[in-house]
Amino acid sequence: MTECRYLDDIESHMLGAAPGHLVEYIGKVDDDALGRALELLSRQYSILRSTVRHDGHGYLLQVQPGARLPLVSVAGGEDEASAVIARPWEPESGLARVVHCRHDHGGFLGLQIDHAVVDGTSLRAIFDDLLAIYSAVAAGGDPDVDKPVLLPASPRSVFAVGQGSPDPTGDERPPRTTGRMVPPVLRRIEFDEQATADLVAASRRHGTSVHALLCGAVLLAQRAQAPATAGPARMACLSPVGLRNRVIPPVGATATTNFLGLHRYELELEQDDDAVAVGVAVKSDLDEALAAGEIPPIDLPRNRRTAFRSSLLPQLAMAQISNNGVLKRKTRHGELTLTRVLTVPHVVRATYPVYSAYTFDRRLTLACVFPSDLFSQSEAATVATSVRTVLTGMTRRVAELVE
Image (spheres, rainbow, N blue to C red):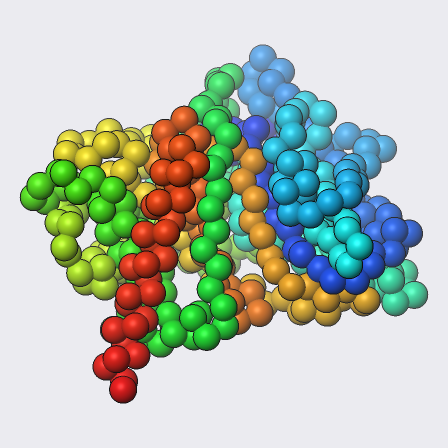
C-alpha cells in the first residue's frame, strides 16, 4: 500500500461510476459529532482524500495532502438524497462524498465512493466505520481510529500473489478510455419481515439458496416481457462472486478494491418453465465453477461480452443478479434509529438489468437497476412487478405444501 499508484484495468473500467450507500434514520444527527466523525474517518482511509487523473501513462490514484471528505447537506427525503447521488462526478477532484438529507423526524445519511476504488464489500465496511465512529463521538468519546489505511492494493496485484485466485491476465496499466455511462432507472422490491422469512423458507424447502430463487424469478420475469417469442429463448445469467475469502491468505474488506469474480450461465428458457428449477440450475453450475476455481475476475473481456444469439431483445436476454446477504448492522446508533438501507446507483454501464439484494433488520430488498436508454420508467416497473409476482408465487407454493 502506497500514497499513489496506477489503477489496473479492472478498476479503470469502473472509474466515474459512484454508487451511494444510504441509511434512513429516525432521530436527529449531531452536526458537530458528524463533522468530527468525518475528520476521523478521513484520517483512517486515505482513499477518501484521493483523486484519479490520467497522466499520459495511466490512471494515477493519488492521496491529496490536506484534502477533506466533503459533506453535502440538503433538506428533504429520499428523492432529494438520490438527486445528490446523481450529481456530476469528477474523479480528478475527489473520489468520495458524504450525503446528509434531513427532514422533521429524521433523514438519510450516506456515503458515495467511486466504484474504481471500492466494491460493495469495501463501501459497506467504510460506511459501517463511519456509523461506529459517529456513535462513539456522539456519546461523548473521541475514539482512536485504527492504524491509517493507505491506498488499497489493486485487484490484479492481489490476484498475482493469491493462491487459488483466478487467472490474473490483464492490462495492469490500461489506456485512457471513456466507458458507457447512462442514467439509471431504479425500482425497489421491498419485502416485509414475514415475506422475507417465507422466501428463506422456500429456498430451504427446495434445497437451494435465496440467490437461486432470485435468479429464477428474474430470468422468468424478463422472458415474460416477450410473449410473442415462441419456443425456447437463449438467456444468460451473471452472478458476481466475492473472492476475498476464496484466496489464501484471505483478503480484508478494505485491503483491495473490486475483488470480484463473475459467473456466467447460459440456458434456453421457455415462457412456462419453472422458476425454481431454473434457479437450481444456475446454482448448480455456479457451485461447480466455484469448486473448480473457474470464476474469472469480473471485468475480463470475455465476461463483458453481451452479444450472443437469442430471439429476445439483447436487454432482456441477460441479467446480473447478486445477493449480498444479511447486513449485520445495529439499528441503534446514539440517538439515531436506522429503519432502512438503500443502495442508490449513480450511473449504469451495463446494457441489461442489474439486480442486487440485501437483508437488513430481517427484511429483504431487491434493487432493480435498468439502463434508461433501453428501458422506460413503465417498462422497468413492469419487469420489477413481474419479478415480485414470481417470487411471491414461489413462497405461496411452499406455504401450501406446508399446510
